[in-house]
Image (cartoon, rainbow, N blue to C red):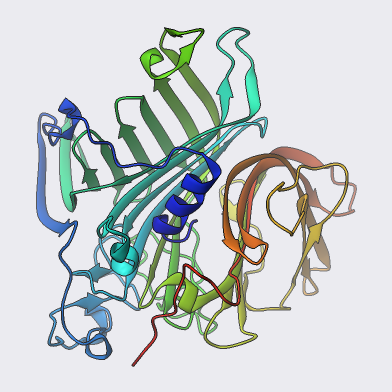
Length: 467
């Protein structure tokens, strides 16, 4: 998961990594033609410069399923989710308000931990004052291929932030060979690029694509077992979602004014990127097109907030791992409004079943998380926190069991500097662990982690809670 792409834009520009809005005409700006037997309805549009213009303190409301009232701005802000609300992949803020932000995030790591990707789709007016508008799409990958040797170059990354003119999220139905698939489709378009996501309503799969003059990218995520949940109020016939609710109701609030859901805690991922050789020059000549492809692990999160991230959060940490028969997803949010409030949620599964206890809620309930600082793993070269891995211990006194999972960082997947020596870093690597003791083996597999901290004061960021 990532903060607003405007922050990333500034950092990428300062660090020399590509971050731009392309200006040349490219045929891919046209909306892709629908597939045969595909029908889409209820299109939710958002444009680059249009937002709701009512006073901020009047605009938010509850979910449709909780007797929400229409506000003067006619803006719906979802605070919970139940079976009557439709897919979680649909916009949770509609239309955009000047203080709010919403994000669709997808990430993945190769099986050997040396390559990674991250996608971010944004509806976020908070930093439109930079002249970039409300809509952004972000892609970054680590582990490009040495075209001379065919080897993965661990230190290489490709990153781009694009500023879209239009975004559309719609509900679609596809009939193919007698089978009917219902899904949500999102499309962010600009003059020479298009980003899309497709998420099935049963959360069985997600597809993400990106095309610009330099690269065409395709990602497919397929679920591993049922989606996670700590919410028992979601209808059994619908996919459930993991939340932070201690009462196990349908609220999706993580910390005050900040909402989170994880439709794909851990999924099988297939990644492919085809680079146009003309975009890469060596010895004065363009190179041949080349492909980067791998299988691994991925995930998908939904995040939205009444105010910007700098207002709502002080920091966060996330871990995703696929370790032998175990899958693990951990997230921790530190509130920027309620000082000292730290909320975390973790899901551990063995095979296709949640393996025992639920670990979700305030700090200190059954879970111990430690940052590692050793010579074994890779650390950031830019930020002050030189963490090289994450150690998670899950305890179940009721069952007399303990699980331990250690993620060792191998490659920096993405990074952004926010001032005061802090910011965010996403790592790919290898996770090891499993059930501790009991003669159980230690397993290994791909791991992803992200550590982020906001500065106490910032020359770029301003808090926007003013009601």
